[in-house]
Length: 77
Image (cartoon, rainbow, N blue to C red):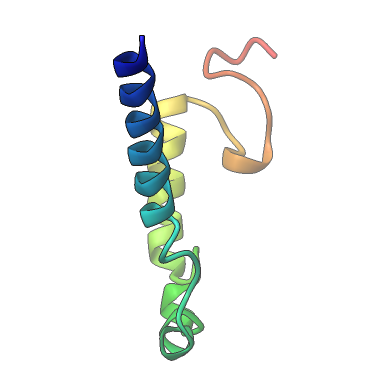
């Protein structure tokens, strides 16, 4: 019984260390913020890309209005 308890404690300690190691790099470093603040990094910054994405969405969903309208692709709403 003691061997099983020891293995459970070792397993719990290993899991805790794995979780703690994954949380080491959360967020953005100060020297990376200038790159992320550029206009190219914002979603939907390019009108052509946005139009192509909307066209693909309309074609696949067979609906009109894209992201701003609700309803299914069959047009029954």
